[in-house]
Image 1 (cartoon, one colour):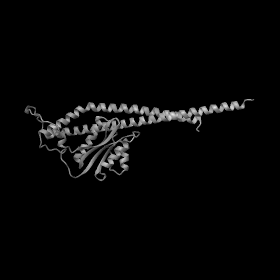
Image 2 (cartoon, rainbow, N blue to C red):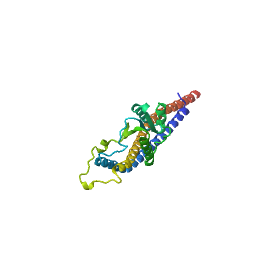
Image 3 (cartoon, one colour):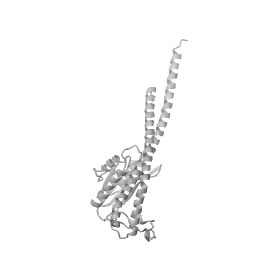
Image 4 (cartoon, rainbow, N blue to C red):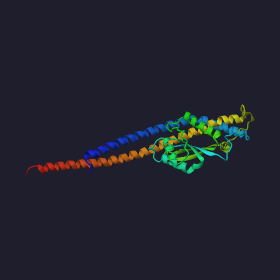
Length: 285
């Protein structure tokens, strides 16, 4: 049986670990709530951009835009949003598995946000752009705009036939699922589905200098909104996965503490009993 000092040392170590896991849980809760609040604040603008695009496509069926052209040849450009750190349960492993199963390795270029995912996918032989080193922690609109500019520029000028975003969507507090979203080229039916054009001719909008120019100008804002939403969802999912992992770690620490406390008390009682026995045995008759 381990000695009292050894058991006491292990108890102190586990209690210290429990304090860390509880603190990490609270930090993850705060970060997730802050990111969600930022997304809620930015959503109305991007919703309005989507409505404007729907209005243009509805009123101008013959509009031509490089963002609408389907290309038969070229590589796929995939933005993969993984994690920067571990200790989030199966979060990183799930997104890496999903990417491996969903992306054709020989015809795809990966832009991976998150150090953990970037390293893992490179080891698996994917063409990972080494110059793309954006973090995932604390997403913001400026970073999303920088990423979306890279996506749109490479789509227009880099010979890619599509832009895909792979991220984790938080279905609920207990469930986070990887998703694949095709961002470019745009599909008319996605914008016209459920959209009704106004009947009043007086409400018809005139676009200057023309509808195509306006459409091409606001489409990058739409891509920014999609990118920002994906970053926030992925970050929130990672934090929720870390919350669950830290909850499990804290419960495991409680179980270990209970077991070690019982073991400590038994060892202490045995030591006291042995000392009493030695004292009694040494007393004269």
